[in-house]
Length: 227
Image (cartoon, rainbow, N blue to C red; front, side):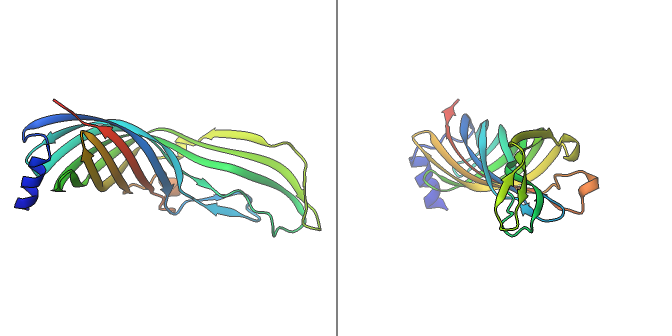
């Protein structure tokens, strides 16, 4: 640890007792545990899949010692999940509704408090706590009515429609999580890989039997401005 501390100091880490501002932007890969979407109660459903979204924010970091720093940030993140298109390949002849491009869009404004342990020059292990405030919850999809013929072919009976609906009344407005990850710093550029472990069931009491929680990977690039 002593060798690592010397190496970090020599690599140009901010001096102890100083502050830095780090604006950052990147991509979030999000999903919801135990989540599913029922296309047709008679036939098919899909579990939640990982989807990509934007994340951007700014951190204020305090260098407590050569090896330890703390940061408090605020960020916007598009979370949620996506679902497979409805699969009617094994459906019996009859009338159905086909679904595609189904997205569960959850937008959060998050406040992470994170500790950074520098174990090698420019490398730190990070862990902390985070509270997120739900800004928007919206389900979007494309759907079209169709008939499955006896030979397995499809006949569309309506044009595809794009549908969006708010689901704010279903979701809790506050979400707690534990961010853990790894950061690499070089020439004031900070690359951060983080995984947020969801602690809060995202749906309100009417749906508590389904223990759905946010799961989010975030990869961001920032620039450290020393104060």
